Image 1 (cartoon, helix red, strand yellow):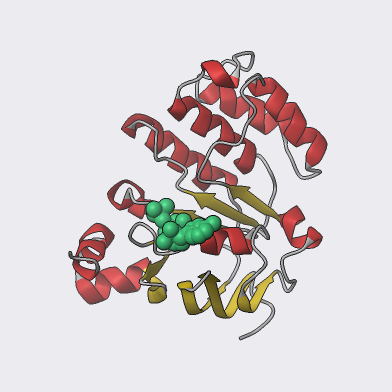
Image 2: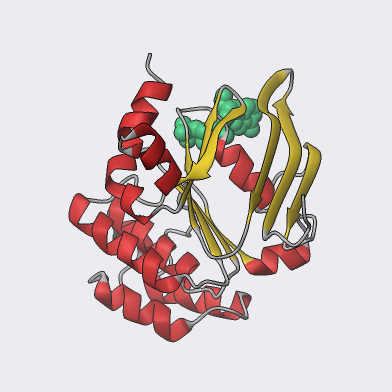
Length: 234
Ligand SMILES: Nc1ncnc2c1ncn2[C@@H]1O[C@H](COP(=O)(O)OP(=O)(O)OP(=O)(O)O)[C@@H](O)[C@H]1O
């Protein structure tokens, strides 16, 4: 595999104790695509994203982001949205924007404030008084207001209503550039499949699919949602 890829995983394996979560995963992603990371509960999607974000380092195999092992450099070009809210309750949305602005040199404060407005969020409202979905929107706005190379979005819409999901997907589409790649994990395949270029599907610790959406649709004649249900039929 070439080191010029934005993401290059080679023979990545990760155990929690004796339990193998990721087994021999190899994946290469170029810049300029939106990648859906799919798979059933507990198949290792969050673990894989945390490794790419530099939050888990005890794995085997090789992980290169923009040619570097996860380190200070890669953290400066990776914008990671964790599965769980991490914003302090007492902050107002605008305080969170200011913290990101101070912390990340690639953060576009104007863009963040415009997105708060677009999502009809009051910048002065405190996080603790926001609903789960509102908090998720604030987090996504913060993450997408960076000019990152790699966006890792772990279930960005789990608590968001269907109308807002469309706005969020449009926000992702308009904020990413050809120079960057978005990897998004979700169980809401039906709602999200229109934006994906490529699908990476994990199951039982292994990669069970890695192909473009066009190829998958042409070869199966089915929607991604249908393909997923067939692969993981219980
Ligand atoms: N810190 C940990 N210690 C031990 N086991 C863990 C830890 N974190 C995750 N696991 C286990 O690793 C497996 C993969 O978890 P992970 O969160 O990566 O899955 P996921 O695909 O993101 O799941 P979901 O779709 O439910 O969010 C699960 O069996 C989980 O119980």
